[in-house]
Length: 130
Image (tube, rainbow, N blue to C red; front, side, top):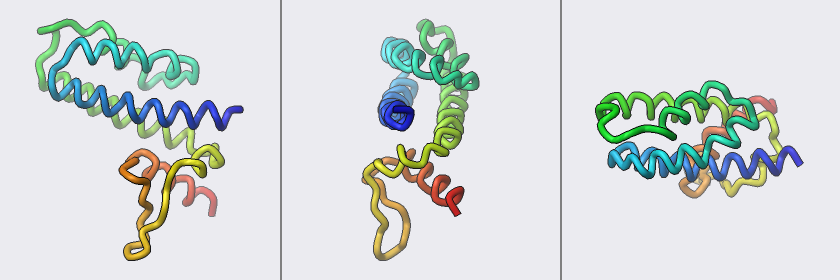
């Protein structure tokens, strides 16, 4: 059951994180608010306290409240904290084994069909399994 929750969390967070990143780059405050609001419950449930304060800021962000540079800095920090959270969750190896991945036969690199988070996490999972 926990593996399923983590798998859903990873998939949803990747999608939402990409939406949030695009919204920040476009300074689309309404989309920033909506996406942060959608992300907060699971981060609260999993008690990922390094991400929650940034999402709370983004959830109620107002137009002209921050400069573009400040928004980008907060978003960069958020993206890094999300990756850290995924690494922590990666100890549930069976959840990650079900992500769509393959190994490139020429390079040996993990290919997850554009899923950058899955690639990063699978490397961590594989290295901790040794």
